[in-house]
Amino acid sequence: MGWFTAPEYWLSRLVFQRALAAVYLVAFLTAAVQFRALLGERGMLPIPRFVARVPFRRAPSLFHLRYSDTLFAVVAWTGCAVAAALLAGLDAWLPLWGGMLLWLVPWALYLSIVNVGQTWYGFGWESLLLETGFLAVFLGNDEVAPPVVVLFLLRWILFRVEFGAGLIKLRGDECWRKLTCLHHHHETQPMPGPLSWFFHRLPGPLHKAEVAANHVTQLLVPFLLFAPQPVATAGAALMILTQLWLVLSGNFAWLNWLTIVLALSAVRFPASAPPLPAAPPWYEAVVLAVAALVLVLSYRPALNLVSRRQVMNRSFDPLHLVNTYGAFGSVSRVRYEVVVEGTLDDTPRPDSDWREYEFRGKPGDPRRQPRQFAPYHLRLDWMMWFAALSPAYAGAWFGAMVERLLENDRPTLRLLRRSPFPPDRPPRYVRARLFRYRFTTWRERRESGACWHREYVRDFLPPTRLDRAPRAD
Image 1 (cartoon, rainbow, N blue to C red):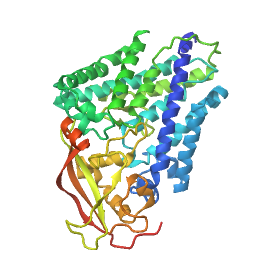
Image 2 (image 1 turned 90 degrees about the vertical axis):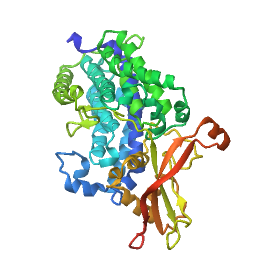
Image 3 (image 1 turned 135 degrees about the horizontal axis):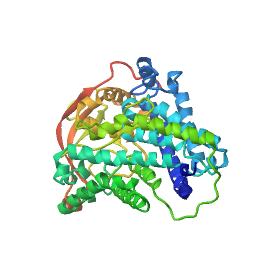
Image 4 (image 1 turned 90 degrees about the horizontal axis):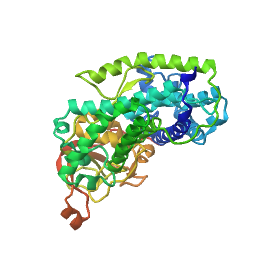
């Protein structure tokens, strides 16, 4: 079938595959480094407890067969190794079927992690990586030209990411319709970056221009993806520029980078295609069967796009093959932060020596400048932002985190930037207080050097101690 492949996209496929492998590598590295404190046998939300109550059919995962921290580490580090091999181009040295199997490995391993990840893996970019990674299995290697069907299915993902995000904004907070959301968003977003203070201090009219440009990129430009070239390339380029702007303005894990990767698959690079063999019949049959499956599973996500009750970041099947996306349907006007403190005093008093725990990414010390972490994902820091919005977001894990701090639990402390207590002397009490944070003005920053100003609001958790002796590591 001559229409089946598009040789002119061979370089697009190559760039897409290598970039996707890099995202996989970051995702698996994040899992390998953080899982013990979050999901391990002695973690805040242990996987063994989850798989005991959730059946395999609802959350397919290797860990339903058996779980141990050692096995999780093997899965995560194996994912890192395979992603690194794909980044280096190992799939190009394998036969077509071998390359497909190699791409299937990180998808299956990461699916096993996401499906038992609970709250820590409830972000849209997890499903986005799985959906994109599944289609990457069928893109082929140097033994065949890129299949047109898969290229268009990748654009279908990108369309839903951008158009869904645009619609959720128009249907949500009125500040998106008034073009005023960015008067607040750079300050109140989950994890500001090193340039967020400067973005927040941009003039109001420029903020409105940002929002208007965002509406154009998310509501109109996505339709250009399905236009002939070079229009599709121009549309993808506009999306890439918008995502790079978001990369500069905050920390959104690998969401922006993966969106860029998807857009790269729609770019037609000006390079002559090398001679490529015709696609074998078995490969054509597999690709067309997968395309038919994706189209059938797209019904509910497509229906969600046009629904007045549109939801965002929802998976409609346990394999995360076709999902719905979107972000910031509402924007906070005020930033709250939960500040966690401990004391060595036997009796906690307001004037006790309360020492603050420092997190890696979330705001804490007003003088500490925000750092750039994305595409690496600080899962605990992100959930602390949600906890500040409402204690309901923290109900499942916050108490367990406090318990680990009272034990000086090493895996938990590794998630933090700094603990104020020596390893052999854990705090007697831990408390949490809610503060209102705002970016300082130009004058305040010049005078104090601080980028944040904070004010105490109320107690979030009263002084709490262990009712038993700390466990041994």
